[in-house]
Image (cartoon, rainbow, N blue to C red; front, side, top):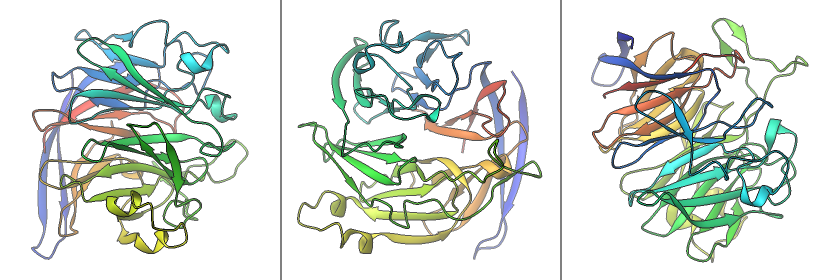
Length: 344
């Protein structure tokens, strides 16, 4: 395991803020992972989206020896074109809620070639038994042809899940008691990618055909008070938030809802978002090989900057208050892919 002392400096109305954090390598893989979740007992779960044909399992549990085993079992991971409704087609995200249930999000869009009919779904797993407790399926008009359901947060207080769609910009809200879902903020400026170019290690990020990628709303987080949902596009630097009460208000119209969003100004191009228990919002600063955080007063601080953080992807808050982060190296297209730990 490697360890490095990282330093950073940020300016605020209180003067320079100096941060020192240790970045500890936890695991390495030659398979590309994105999502990461940690249970109350410290169990670690990862997703391997099927962005190429070499993916053998799409959801795994990371074991103490660094290996991964298919989770919840081999059958759910045994998709090769058949039974998409009962198999992981292209699992993207995992999330453990505050009651210690694991949620698995499957956009069912392998290699970004379109959503497989019957495949898009959200699973709830009981971690005491490792059994699937609930499956919520998504079809039209919730899912569009180019949809890519990307990240999820669950609010157990209201009994709803909130899901970003980075392929067809918008948010999906799910009533977990009834399984009913609906789309909001479709093609809104707050959920749509900005017209910017991202740069990694001095090189512009371009698609094989030379065009600039546009990835819409991606990272999402609920603040510890449960009042606000924070979100932003991956190819975008503007942070937005909206009160959960507006997302759940059946009387507010689609025309009125955009007026309830709040623009919190420019931050960084980021993939994953997550809050700590003190209300600080952490970003994976993908262009900077870094993790940053936004304090409740709006100050942006550098937390960790390290060249090993090649496209830091998903953040997960552990029970002890430390953070774990995956590196997915999307701009490089090859491994090794890492999981690191740092303590705020």
